[in-house]
Length: 405
Image (cartoon, rainbow, N blue to C red; front, side, top):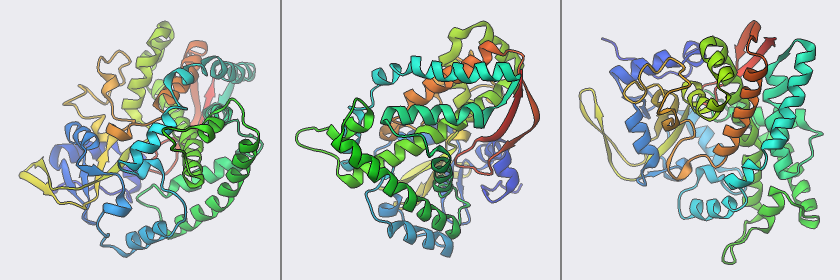
């Protein structure tokens, strides 16, 4: 038989990748693409790779040169950018140092203190929606709540929310394997607007510190070590974008999953305490981040369908989180949403290892409150009109979902 192909340029693949993941996992779980990258779709392979110290996250420094001209041009353009690399793309010891510094200002205890504020914001939206008889989920709740929360955390102004949302969507587009040089140029323009704005806010906060995460990042110190201005800007950009962009999609995808499984919606409504496990199951079922890449620093061997597959140092290895989360070897009946699933918390939606998502606790809390409140107050909610999705694969999310109560 003809083996399946990992083809993000296929619009059917982007629209619903899970059947393609299944085919790859069954017939070619260590898939080599036409561009000579490796795609992993089994849970065990993905989890082991993410947790292994034999892999690098710094693709630009350690990945071999791509073979196609577009990828070469895109890499050269990224390399030409000024400023510090994001903590997402660093290896130890640089990653260890930055994570240690910023973790002091981003603890689970600090996040839990946000619960009353998040609940108040969600209740305000739900009250307005109840009066109106419905809402458009993304524009009225899924975007404004996480954006307000991360703005609160950093004590950032919210008067330019629309502009910041546009910058964020442009910047995250370059994470897609289908991005073009035009997309990178647009991202450069977005950074050109975002960075001066953030520098202005940081400079003002340096002169007028407060009780907020940005002030804490400015003050954080460990054995004489501090964040440079470039590192601080890089981390604030990450917080601002990742701090709301993926949570927008988590909320949207979770509500969509509830609508597709009314029995599970009814279960969450009847048992509100199931919220934390329900969020983990939603993350497993249709997570907002579908894939991430690693680079082996030594030869690595995987079990292929025709025998061992040796992946050489410098190869680009794509770990498909969405495929791993639907591997029946780990999650029986994986395409069924089951809010009582015992091992739902073993999902890889937040990746794993040293790069496990720093904001996981915040994303979980926001989704638990936002989706749980809707399910609790509007158990008969239903979608109105067509549900549209953003035409992306790496960052997967509902673009529009109108609800009627």
